[in-house]
Length: 327
Ligand code: FES
Ligand SMILES: [Fe+2]
Image (cartoon, rainbow, N blue to C red; front, side, top):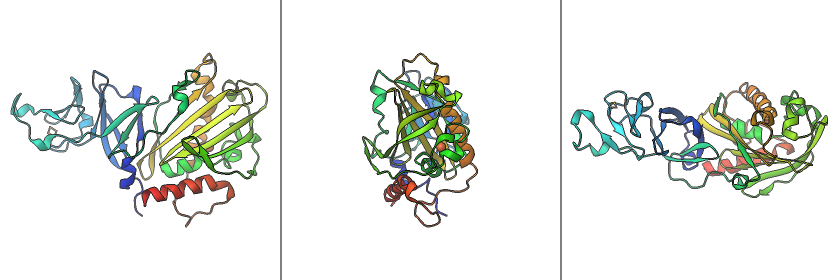
């Protein structure tokens, strides 16, 4: 089977691989689209990102250390700055010319929403837009970036799907969800493409801090939308006007393992601790991860090999657009 994660088209998009606060003056090894990379942060806050292979004898730079903002190879001490320029070959002595081929092309790196995003080739699109990030009425809550042993395609499919709520999420909020999904239309949701819907959701003890209500069920006006290739935004608005926005990040490490994190924005009064208002989200995340790690392989992007119904149409449309992007 051909690999989807190493498809060249995906190299032109931004992918989140780490939490910004997790990248300091110690090298961090990350795998993205089948490529091993090293990340580090210089004293002035700039991020460095290079392929994790020293051009001298191919040692992993991530096993080295950071000195004066440069990454130093653990094998013979060659140093590279954040632009990929080889600034020191110790065996040649300071000031000696460096072989031109020692300089490494830097990987595009940016920091947004508390996450480090990489693009392995020239970007053709920006980091997906979350307008609430610039709105002072909202606070942002970040979590660590974890590895899920499943394909990113299965994750996006899951995050666009509401019909698993009564099964996978029965223990968290899904017990009050209706099995039957009413007809919905796909359309533009600002910078996202997807659908809006309303649900009656169970409001368990773990969720009362998030909903700001203590009734046994709550009404949620929700939307689920995607931005190619793998970003999903889920919005929840309660009848009180409280909004809870989730960015669900799925990044292929390779075909069958992925980085996952989510970012939350809320227009509450910021008084309830972040851990409390996201307890339900973290339960839901664990439920999805448990389910998806039982499903092997990548999700077929065409309609051969899997059967879809009307309620799957958001995922069917996302897969159609992803196929076009990869074509
Ligand atoms: S392998 Fe990196 S300096 Fe020799
Ligand atoms: Fe889910």
